[in-house]
Figure (tube, rainbow, N blue to C red):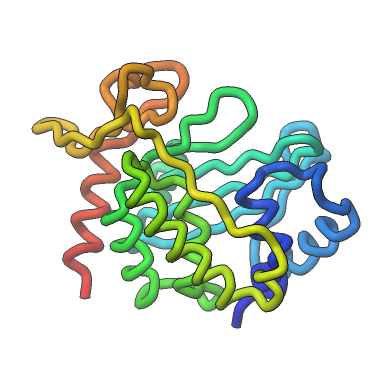
Length: 228
């Protein structure tokens, strides 16, 4: 059964806009209470800022994690690959107000993950929720592809959330100056002349901003593709 907060247009408006201050604080607090019934909600390092975590399994060892940090002026959404055996999470991409590097998924990978979780996911999962959570992390380079994904996202949004039509549509962003390319060693890369909107490229290998886990991510994606 879908958590009541995830069927509320307010949650997705907040998730896609990442601007806490545009929404009534009491409404956000009410949503956090509802979400805490199904998801882990902790506080950030400051001891005050709430962080909501979505966990989506990828077999017995790995999972995709999404941390939604509800800061007062600007929210942060982080996507990571968690390795339960190693006991650590590695960033895939993130949205924030400083140096965002969100674009880390191909549209084909989004579809593969959503399809996999439709058969191997926790009770709270719904394919519409999976699509809405991951779509902001897809690297798109053409307006046509952006508009098609936006149509899918907003169809899921309207279907999931009664009253969504009374709110603005959810926006999907793109990078026309970026391209996907396949590297024989690392796999798929997403980059442009200014490689600061994704860490899924050679420019960030071994860097301080983030080091995309190419080996683990590629292996996990191959494994779920082979899973019935």
